[in-house]
Length: 332
Length: 255
Ligand SMILES: Nc1ncnc2c1ncn2[C@@H]1O[C@H](COP(=O)(O)OP(=O)(O)OP(=O)(O)O)[C@@H](O)[C@H]1O
Ligand SMILES: [Mg+2]
Image 1 (tube, chains in turn green, cyan):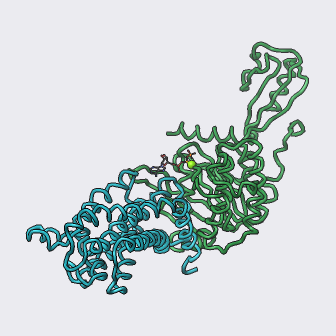
Image 2: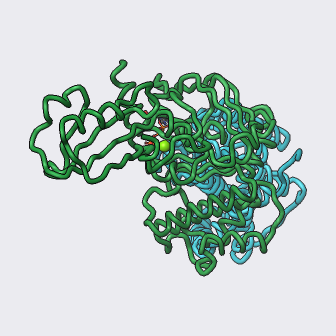
Image 3: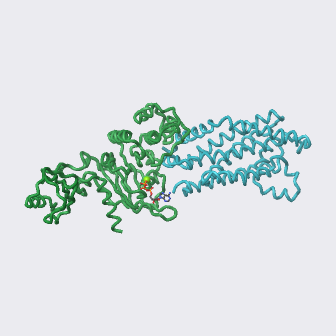
């Protein structure tokens, strides 16, 4: 049945990335956070981010993504645990650690009355870097903000404000960039631009950790994916491996003659009738010892069910992710 | 990097830039207020109260007037300076920057103190149009001037961190500082009060600050200048200690 697959399952996972750089640029160990009031937002998280990778942190609302990022960036104090960023303890050696890190927070927080160029220069100075008009110009041009450099931030649109925040985060040339939902409320075109920018940054050696609710974003960009739910990191995986390992596949048979009910002889398989009876769909686990596909095909021919075409489709990260989180809910 | 001087400078410049946006009202207000005080107190009341301890009444109130404005300005500027980023959320950047607590305070308080000293000087110059001023001990004047501006900015900084709303931001200046200032001998000498009230007044720390500052002008104060300076330094030290505690515990800055 391999030949029928439109997506071969044994192509190399992780693209060219895995194996090249395994040095952790951030290592988080035993990190937990209990907010005042007693809510535990993070439960002993261990995670290593590799140098130069794009890491996508996924999870439902309130999972603890922002909490984790805020701790690494020094905005929230951890209750327990330790974070080493580029070899520096984020608490003991905060100056060295923070110099390496840039943050684009989830919420749009800007100084409304300031000009774009001033606010970016301010950020650079705040991080202790000498003025560098050429570099600032480059960032603003990359983010198509150069034309707006003399505008006050209050005169910009929401998407432009978000780009100003990215410019601020990049102003001190960080090696590690946190993007907390960079594309929330951003139109499709701009989102594509953002993806391109992230790839460009990665090429220049920046490690990127992003959170997103758009799974296609993680699918498009990430090298690895982490899923966090209710403060627990429930999974960290190479994106490709994850999709291969957890991916469910669907086999679709385009029937020669429509059927109204599933014949008794096929009741051993979990089948659904689709497209007004013109299609028969079978969902299976691609990694299972027995997928049930060959036997299904044999049985259909025994039963004289003819089909014009067949194809298989692998489930998206979104489907995987929803499956994971709801499994967990079931456990509790 | 032992000291993030560029970071301090960036904040300092940012804050002064914020002040510059409201420069006209910021400087016109004290000029008008001072002029009004001279019309009301200097001319109307002063005509019946010619001298206090040998100093013409109009001149007598000048040091108190400067202090009055500097208390208000310092607290207002410094508390706003740190409250605004908290309120707007832009404080995330400050918290994620490689800048120490000391550097942060230096930048914010330095900027606020700069502005309130400018206001103080504007009042001094304005007053000079109305009355003949003399400064007998300029070194002490400068010392009190800088120290008191800084101390009240530190105090304002603490209020800005403590405040959770714009209302809380106003409440301490309005309910505590204003009354204490008016009862602090800005417009009269405490010798003019009945003995019992004089004793009560001595519990008002503002009395010592105004007295010391006035002494540096005319060589006469309600208490000795050493005591005034000690009180000023004591208040300064207290504010520093509270700020040190705030940053050590992350009080109301980090969750
Ligand atoms: N300052 C705070 N004080 C108390 N609880 C907080 C605080 N910040 C966050 N929380 C709680 O911690 C939990 C995790 O919040 P967090 O912002 O980290 O979630 P998230 O994964 O980023 O969610 P989202 O996808 O909605 O951004 C939530 O239940 C939230 O209510
Ligand atoms: Mg979040």
